[in-house]
Image 1 (cartoon, rainbow, N blue to C red):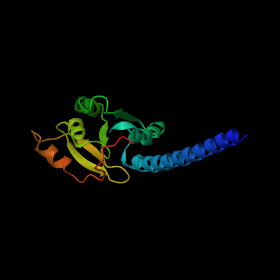
Image 2: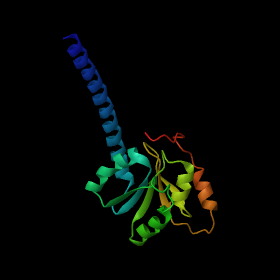
Image 3: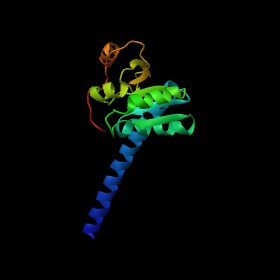
Image 4: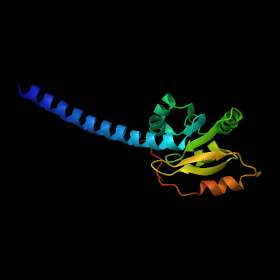
Length: 154
């Protein structure tokens, strides 16, 4: 009986912690979704890195024509080509840069310039086709303030 009581108590404790953490994540994602919905227009593309950015942005696809691409698989190497194709399809192109390491931001942007579209709760850039040849505009754009220096995958 004592063992059964301990097992039930432990499972209740673990479940309570899990429910609290789940509610925190859902609340954070709901806030992020509200903000992203304002910043990301219909008929656009959004590059994300890792899961939390994608999780928050995913429900936007229910109300808007938004393509969400996770650049983690190839560290952003194909993103410049995809951005050109999205623009050819008359889509504006955005990138969530909050948790994205600087080298992947550079790879994702390619030769495009970055314009800040939103800063809270995520740092979101719009990739703007650069009119200047070379990488000088990109180097300046990546040095923009980055609210999260951590590259953790939470």
